[in-house]
Length: 238
Length: 225
Image (cartoon, rainbow over all chains, first blue to last red; front, side, top):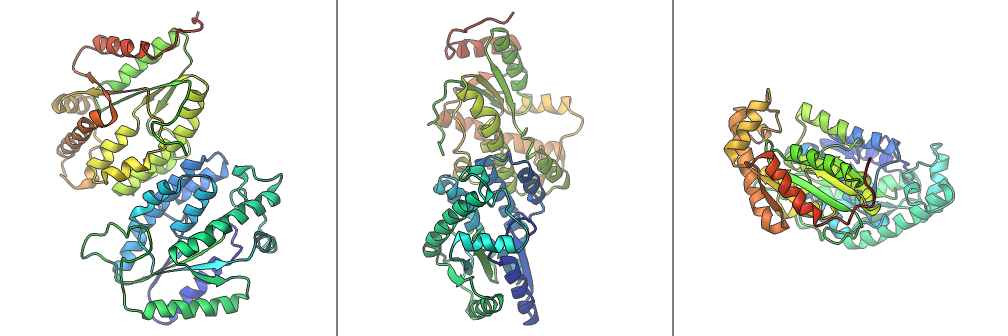
């Protein structure tokens, strides 16, 4: 991920996982939000201007996601790759919900997405802790990740805390609803990484059972095209 | 999020729909001139005109990056930007908004491309329901003739070449337009579109439109000089 605060260390863990999986002989595709060939650049440009409306933003993200799903993830899964994604539809759904957008609407847009084999939620205790991590990473607060478009506080910090607190709440609720594997991200990178490796190994060694996932409908895949491999999603606060 | 049919604005929204070559843009610009001359505040909004999305669409069309689903979603993104920027604010301010192509274009094209009918409708539920939706209906052969004679070369997506119906541009275009027209026809009742016979004279069509629109407007407050 190029843009975005990475307070919980998602991209660090994705790259550690990737190296580890490859050393075990698995082919890996890693992908993440706003990285699509189709819409990635457009989203970044649109965000720079700060004039992106709420609905427009959601649909732009959905375009990016479906492009990656159809052109990267599904083909990779069909040819036996393991797909690691940095954020999946849940981040988009959480951002939409915090912005007061009808969640049934968002869910129906993403209705064609694939239910992942596992979602790892890197959970941090509070927005204050996340804020401290963002600062120590040296990047400072980003307009969108501080929810500045929502006018929640007087400055970036107040707004960030309020916005991320709301995001955490939504993530916690989704975590129950969709059965995320919750990982305590307040620990050292080493111990989180070890935990992730153990959990991923369990998922990979399970026999493949495609489709049966929680709540949203599995992909509109035609018979005979079911992916043979696994998807894992690493998610976390914004 | 307020959904289709539930917005309440003092302004009025008139949209024109129809296959390419049905003459709807000509009619809309005549309407625009007339309303302006009558002293109404009028805004004009075109399909595929969001400055935020424009570059992405252009690049994707050039490089053939679209699938039916992403074609649909990117156009919905464009439309959402128009709604949030060009359509809702003037309607709130009591102005008249004229839209050249609206959500029905997406419903017709995306379903013709094989997207799920219910899914596409759901994606666009945020759209404001127009005061009147005019559908300019021209028989398939007339529309195709107007387009093919008026344009040097049909573009890739315009001709539906991405669908693999035919390698021949004109043949593919004919299949595509036929499917689009079928979708429009089924939307007339579903969305209460007002059908205008696009084979009549330009003047007759314009008179008919003005008669319908007058009934929806309050007496003008001032007249332009």
